[in-house]
Image (tube, rainbow, N blue to C red; front, side, top):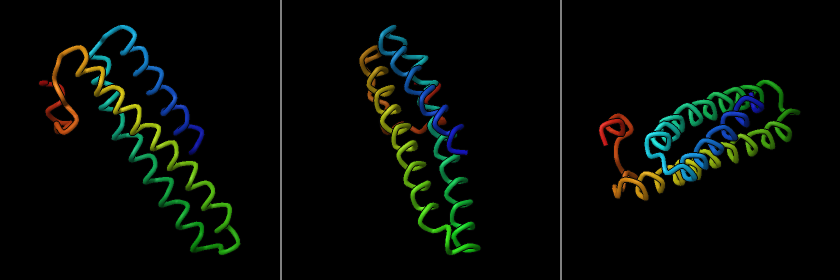
Length: 107
């Protein structure tokens, strides 16, 4: 749920900051690869909340608030990914912002 998603986003941020402090491009790339899982986690939560709203109209207000929280956590993952991409650029001099995640390991 949201607690797991929050823990994942927090861990990504921690690891991205560590990669910056240590100038570790490989660790930064690992953070970038974890963003996909966070996005998938958001999609699952959104799907569950939508189903709940369809089943119980009285849950709409609460569910939309939970959806917002999940979206904010997903955005933290996006910003963390941006930070990690900047670390790779800082260390390797390569702009990987538009590189396919499948090719990231080869960059």
